[in-house]
Structures are given as structure tokens and as C-alpha cells.
Amino acid sequence: MDFHQLWTIFSTPDNVPIVLLLFVVPFYTWYGMRQAFANDRLIGQLEADPALAKTSHRKTQPWKPGWAKEVHVWPYLLRIEFLAAIIVTVILMVWSITLNAPLEEPSNPTLTMNPAKAPWYFLGLQEMLVYFDPWMAGVVFPSLIIIGLMVIPYIDANPLGNGYYTYKQRKFSILTFIFGFIVLWVSMIIIGTIIRGPGWMWFWPGVTWDHNRLIFEVNRDLPDLFSIKGRIGKLIFGAIVMGIYFVGAWIGMHKLITLTKFSKKIYARMSLLQYSIMQVFLILMLLLPVKMMLRLVFRIKYIWITPWFNI
Amino acid sequence: MAETDGKNGAPPASAGGTTAGSNGKNGKGKVTALLEGGKVVRERATEEIKALKQPEKTDLWKSVLRVKHDETPRSRALGVLSNVFLHLHPAKINRDAVAYKYTWGMGGMTFYVYITLVFTGTLLMFYYHPSKVVAFRDILYLEHDVPFGKLLRNMHRWGAHLMVIMVELHMFRVFLTGSYKPPRQFNWVVGVLLLVLTLLLSFTGYLLPDDQLGFWAVTVGTNMARATPLLGHDGPFGHMLGMTPFNDVRFGLLGGSIVDANALLRAYIWHCVAIPIIASTFMVVHFWRVRKDGGISGPAPVMLESEIKEPRKL
Image 1 (spheres, rainbow over the protein chains, first blue to last red):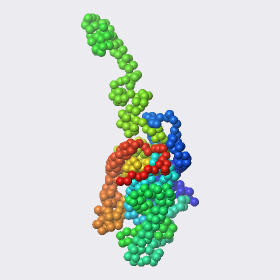
Image 2: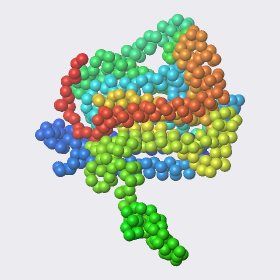
Image 3: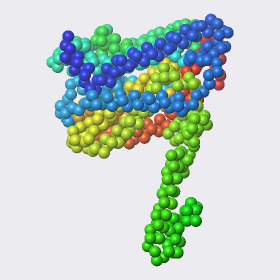
Image 4: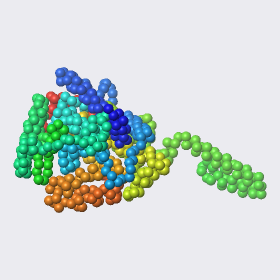
């Protein structure tokens, strides 16, 4: 266990935001989900007692008869904003006084940094470069993330859970988002920061970053495992495998989308277009963990080799 | 009589003048007249100072604030509505909407950090030249010679990181509360664009110190652009469209085939002028839409499964 290495990683000034992320993301997940479960209990009560649902008990905030429905922005909101501004200023000041922004040597194109890392918020994309070629990891996936996020409101046909925390009423969407945000985005950032060392090699926390380390792992392509040779053979084989993945993932996702009685009801509300768009994005999102698995566990580099691009 | 004249607003000197006319040869009379006049001025000054104890009655005060600021509900509402900085808010909001545990305050704090960044960034611009060699020296100068220069740079750097974290948490909260659902779908789209712009702002700023860290981060980042399908010289189908390192999308981003002086200048202009203007415009739309879509989404009363209405058919 090399604690010095561990300390070097965690105390690098630009890694401090990731250390912060390690705390705030779990905290806010807990903070949000706790309210979600509390509201779910309330929903359970109201469903059991329809008469209760007609009263003020369906509000998630405290309520007493005679309380005004609305409050003045000044002072009830502005004082919170003012306080928040002061707290943020204090945090930023203390952080800036205690920790200096990094400044390395002057830029030198002839001296490559090892590891050369992108800013932390792009480390997820850089980590994807291990599993996909740059055109996928650097261009197609980022665009898909942006477009995929934008279409969320238009493909979510579930009218429940608008304006309050809930898990029970939106299981599928909440689990999907947590999977995308925490499992894929945040954890890939953490892998990129803490685990990836020189040569972008995998170093478990506490292992010394050895610049001379060699890995005798040979990455194979999926067609090679099946002894398929020749460009056309690989092209056709890859297309078939990708086709099988697409169909399999489509069916698997369909099972998930229509898992419960409630989700069947939501599925019935979706238009064909909404459903197809959702499937395509889910399948492409799933491609990342599938490819990670293939690469990290089975050392497979490409599935589909064509003269123009490889996946 | 002189005193009454003074009170009516005639210049006190004229009062002195009339007495001086009657006792022209007497120097003593002049002095008394002068003292009399002085007394009148003093009395007027005391009276006016007394009035200043109620500054809200002065013309200056009224012209600036325009409305009374007392404890009446009307004044409280007008205080918000007639102020250009506060009129983003309605006069009154739902009492539940101020619940911090619901909003996490992340959107507002992101905006505040953005303002801090614009402020510190403008100050940093006074000391920074976006050209090779000089840029790095400017950072050294900022760190070692400029009063509070180091604090300024640190605040800008950590503020940027904080903003990225806050934007992501804001999005997380909006998702968990389902606030992107009708009627707020489009504002979510604007929010996603703002997230992208935040990341781009932070990324373009990374190169500006012109040190090894920024240089290699931007080299790694922009190298991905060369693999853009169709538009990059290393990307699928790129060479078929005649893409070379000197005419592809990466060349456009860097103003050259390597990260050099032109890239620094482009990053500077994107970082300090173009993206802030674009991002501010989208922020205006974002905040406007929050209001127009009916204020913040909750904490709303819960809805039950049995209450789902049939979707409207086109």
C-alpha cells in the first residue's frame, strides 16, 4: 500500500473537485431519495384511503389551516438567496485562500505529460477512449449524451412525479438516470482521476504509479476468436454480431420497460416514435458497459471491423 | 422683518443690505447685519439637517427608490417588482416553493457563481495577454506581483470547478423531482444547452495559462475532433471527403494543425467573449421560462396512479 501515491493523487489541486464529488454526489442522492421514500409512504397511505387524498394531506410540505397559500418574495425568498450567496462566497474564499490553482511548467509540445489528462469533467469521455475509437468516444457518444438528455422530456410518457420526489411512481426513469449519471458518468470520472496512471494503465488505489510498468495483455478482436479472416468475413460477422446485440438488447429493454403492470400502462401511452427513440438511446447507452465488460474481462478490442470504422 | 424675509426664502444678504443702507456710515451696523444674516443661514441649515433625519422624505431618495419601503404588503411587493435586479422574481410565491430541501438551491447558486466568475474573470483580463510566451508570464506576474492576484486566479479556477459540480447537481435535482415534465419540457432542453456551455467555458479556460497541464488537456481534447465522422481527417469517411489536417474541423477549432498561438487566441475569445454572451442569452431564456412555465415545479401535492388522465390524441 503506497499511501504517498494515494496522497499525491488526492491532494493534486485539480483533483480536489473529484474528492468533493465523492462526498456531494452520494450525499445528494441520499438526500433526494430519502424524500422520495417519504413521499412514497404518503402515496401508499393516500392510495389506501381515498378520502384522505381529498384533503390537504396530499401535500408533501407541512400545512396548517389558516396559513397563507403564498408568501412574499421579500423577505422569505430573498433572505435565503442572500444567505446562500454569502455561504458560497465564504466557501469559495476559504477554498481559494487555502489551495492554490495548479500551474505547471510552460507549455512544451516536445515534452508529453504522462498521463496526459483532460479536465476532470471530461475524464469520462477520455476513459471511453479505452473502449471505443476516438470517433465514437470523442464525437458520437458526447453528441448522443447531449441529444439523449434533451429528448428525455419528450419520451417520458409518465405523468406522475411532476414536482415532487418519488421513487415508486417513476422507478424506471429514476434508475435509468442514476445509472447514466452515477454509474457511467461520475464513476468513469473517478476511474479516470484516481485509477488511471501513466500510459493510461489501470492502477488500483494505493498502487505506485510505475512509469516503466509493462502489461503483457494482448487485445483480441472478436472475429479472431472465431478464426474469421479476411475483410469481408469480418465485416459480415461484425454486422451480424451487432445485429444480434441490437435485437437482444431491444427485447431485453422491452421486457424492462413493460416489467410491471404500471409500466405497461405507461408503455401504452407512448407513441411508436417515442418508444423507438427511447429504445435506440437505451441500447446505445448499454453499449458502453457491455463494451467495458468485453474489454476489461475478456480483453476484446473490436467487435465489428470494417474498412471505414471499427466498433 | 429681515427674519421673515429669510424664512420666505429671500437671500439673507438682502436683509443685511437694507440695514446697511439706513446706517451707512456706521461700521458697527455692518457687522451686526452680517451676524444677523449668519444667524438666519444657520437656522435654515439646522432646519434642513433636521429634515435629513428622515431621508426617505427627500427628493433624492424618492427619485432613486420610487416607492415607499415600509412594512406594508404593498411596499414589499413593489420593492421586488420595481427593482430591475429583483423583478426576475414574482412579488409572491407559493409558500412551499422556498423549501430548501426540495430545491437544494443549486440553480440560484450556479447563477451566483457565474456572476462571481464574470467579475473575477474581468479583473484577470486586465493582466492577461492572449499570446504565446507572454501568457504564461502574465500568470506568474499575477501570482507573485499583482495585489491579490493569486486569490483572484484561485477564485476563478475553483469557482469554475464549483459551477460544473453545481450545474450537474441542479440537473440531478430537476430530474429526481420530475420537473422536466409538462409544461417545462423546453426549459430542460435549454438547461442541457447551458450544461454544455458551462463545460465549454471551463474547457476553453483550461488552455489560457498556457502551461503543460492546459496544453496537454486541450491537445487530448481537440485530438478527438480529428476523428469526427465526415468532418475530421482521421474520422470515418473523412478522407473520402478530402479532409486533411489543414482543412478539417480540428483546424477550425485551433486555427492551425497544432495547439499554438492561434489556438490560444481562439480559446481566449471563445472563453471571454463568445461563450459568455451565448450562455448569458440562454440563461435569460432559462430564467424567463421558469417564470412563464408557472414558477418552480414544486414541492407539489402528490398525484396518484388512479388520477392519470387519458393522453390527448392529436
